[in-house]
Image (cartoon, rainbow over all chains, first blue to last red):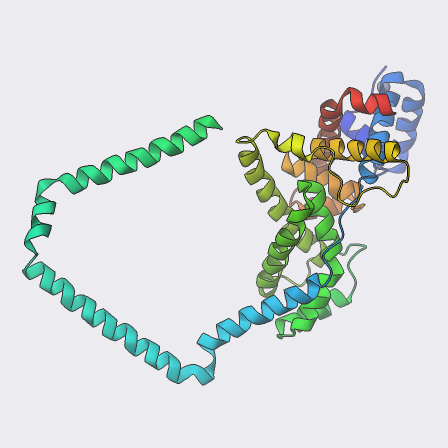
Length: 148
Length: 195
Ligand SMILES: [Zn+2]
């Protein structure tokens, strides 16, 4: 006996096959024990799945989403709104001043590094310390992955 | 593709949202929150996930709306976003559940809404059946799981499922078949004894 492809039997349960195919599969299922058992098993599985209760959305969920996107946009406008030009100008100025200060402090370091820093850089300890701490982190990660 | 769930004013809502009407977004959420909640709950099995993940889904919807092409079915598109959120979370959770294998056991027997049956024995048995079924559904591969839930709970056609999951109709057909086969082998003798 030539059984239908299992995918077609599953589609037959879903009632999504063309009429001509439905007829031939229905005839086969009526005559073939194993295929009938498969179809009946899937049908009772479907009934069981559909009986699982579901949760309802939280009350006022839609209202809270509305408030959330409205709040997000208010935050964006606080920074980008045309009426905030003055505020942005002050912010921009502050960034420039901060940048200048940073550049000045770097120049100072380049010309005269503090003695203790020179010592630390020269000794190689800091490099070793960094490498070993990274190794530890990597080991831990490895252990976690292996453990899973 | 227009689906049976799509209504013409979905696109009116989209236009209003794009124009900055937050009330239209609220209406859109209200229209699809139930389906999204069902998908999340049935896929992940914990009622406490529903709100957080629904929120993530609708925020993604909101932020992606400006780039949405008008010919798309809004329903399929929202479902696709929800499916991605659920599949990501399911993968993350599988990863985590390997750390604590009691996850499935702890979930088995849980029932979100409870049964309305008065007989405590019947109620317990039904709740156990539902818990076992949900635990089994969660053991399916995430793409199979979503396909099955879209078919069984939302009655989507194969074409609609293919659109949501961005795949072909034959792929949906084989995914559903595999989901059913895997579910039966996971549930094994339990289903036989009840049918
Ligand atoms: Zn057969």
